[in-house]
Image 1 (cartoon, rainbow, N blue to C red):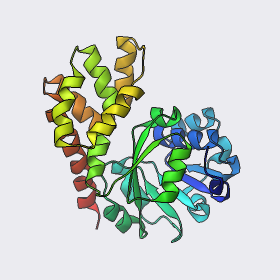
Image 2 (tube, helix red, strand yellow; image 1 turned 90 degrees about the horizontal axis):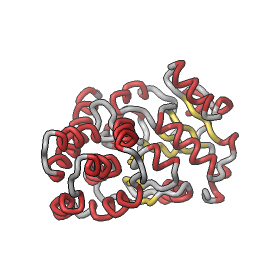
Image 3 (cartoon, one colour; image 1 turned 180 degrees about the horizontal axis):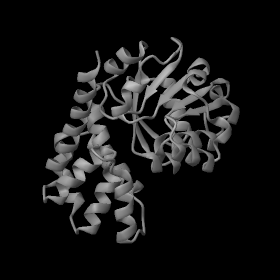
Image 4 (cartoon, helix red, strand yellow; image 1 turned 180 degrees about the vertical axis):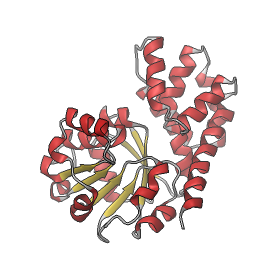
Amino acid sequence: MLPASCSHQMIGIIGGGHLGRALALALLDQGLPRDHLMVSHAGSPATQEELIRAGLRGNIADNAALCGKADILFLAVRPQSVHSLRGLPVREKTLVVSCMAGVPAEVLGRVLGVPVVRMMSSGPETLSGHNGIVAVYPPTPLLAGILKGIGQEVHAMPDETLMNVFTAGGCLPAILLYSRIHHRDPDAEIRPVIHEFPLMGALYAWGVKAVPRDLSDMEAEAYIARMSTKGGVTEAIITGMAKGEPLDAAFRAGIARCVAIGDEVGGKIR
């Protein structure tokens, strides 16, 4: 359950896609009062319908109203949509939490004009299932308490560059399913990855527990597809594995994709 202090917090989520909806539902499921949650989206009728179908009709708000009231603000939009955040009327006292892969806190701070904390989750389905693993940078006790309250294993990162390693590691359920379908040995392949990136030890232990069980090959392929955002990190890793690359090479490609996303977004911010 969420910490008792959360009952006094208004939480806003900008982004009504898979991640935003999963986060909203996880918060409600673990005790956040419904009238303390606001969710906005970019205006897509399909997203609006998905939010309504998820039971969030009464929580939909526009960005101005959300920013004016939120004590904690989660940014659950694609990294490429960072420009849409410019000019948001975010209050100085609001804890702003970015869920965007690869985009450095300093870049987001320039866009919003306020400090930003970063979190990376292992994915919407693990948020919903209360069995995810999350990295936070810089260490932020209030955010860690909220994430633990919705059943997530929380790791505070001492260095922002580790967020890219963690982001790639969050793809492990898809990696493990792909390995099963294609008769690869992930236990052997992960060893050089852990040697190069020790953080992957904890991530692999989590991934083995979190990977969906008893899926048919067709269901596993569908799960991998849901995790593989076009141009994203999971896609980069799975593409490498499909080309026959060992896991350590594919994993480095995933990290490189994280860095590239940050460079692409940061290079366009003035």
